[in-house]
Length: 175
Image 1 (cartoon, helix red, strand yellow):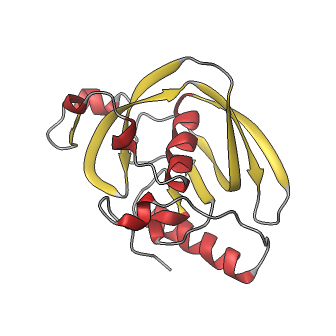
Image 2 (cartoon, rainbow, N blue to C red):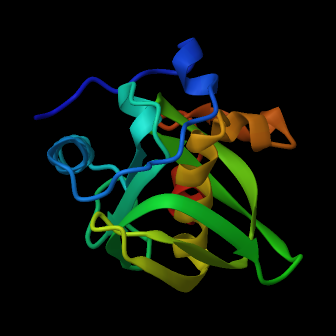
Image 3 (cartoon, one colour):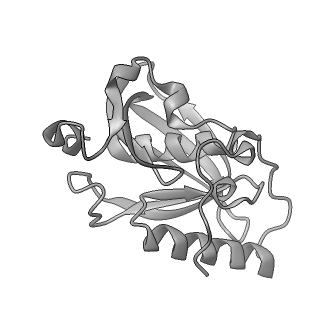
């Protein structure tokens, strides 16, 4: 079922989410199915459970061909429960980000270039991966939602924040 995505200003987006304690349940499966349908319907690169009003540490992400991110490299579809991020470098890079909870806007956001993420799949099996580039950016963006952080809170220069249809398109496409 396609769910309503909460928008910036809704206080539920500012909460710290609770860890998942039971895996492979019908409720968790239904949540993940709703998240996937919602993300796909809105051409999102990822979605966190808090964005649809569910206070759990669950994110999904993945990009193949996406009209909102035409220049982005492919990112494998991933279900990540109770994630933990470990930076593998102190180096950051700026990149343009958008968000389904901040519709119509983009901002230039610094993110760690290379990281390892670990967590669990829907069955409760642990896994970990390393990510760089757009993949690392998407993981950080989605996991921020679990701690009540929206990408404008990470921006260093609000002059680099604006409506997608007003910003220089070549700059936004370069994300």
